[in-house]
Image 1 (tube, one colour):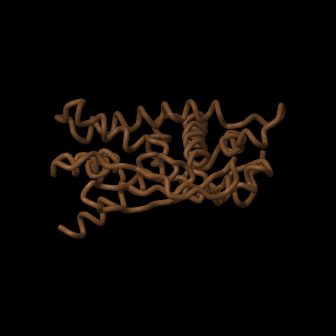
Image 2 (image 1 turned 120 degrees about the vertical axis):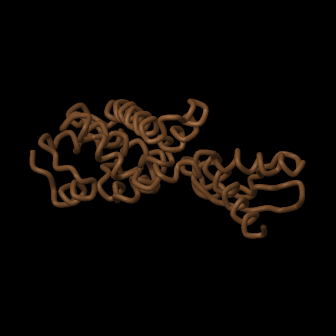
Image 3 (image 1 turned 45 degrees about the vertical axis):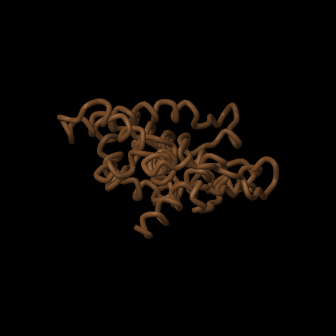
Length: 228
């Protein structure tokens, strides 16, 4: 199987040339366009999630051999969560080569966090099956880059950090209020406002309530830091 020019360019962006290009093709095939002769990437996603987890667990333990499990766990979660995978996918322009059905393309599938995160995990599995664990590990460490070095800062999700900020100042827990919803029922866009009992607020918009809440909490934390 010969890869198209755009897939060859994608190989360059992830730093791996496939000996079995059909693996890359499958990793980029979403269920919306799959068929009996064109399998989707779900099985590869399942495997890639485990490869990513093993790589990050090994890397964190090696980088900080004295850290207890309670310290390692939130760092690990920050590095393997779907948001991190989707961020890496955006950096390598994975969405540009994702193979989607018409309905997914019409609803912005190339930008959807869940689809990008799943496909990134599938690509990891494809590299693992194509060239083995060491090559997959080296690619992951390279693509995750400074996220690994900065993981201590990113380990707590913004909602947890904001709640701890409020508790430390004897304020009530933050509230998250949906202030807007746009788009069709199958692809809604939510606007969420994070509210503190002292009157401080911040808003964010995303294609899921959870993502919008996290972004709103992050925006409010940034605003609070600017005032200190």
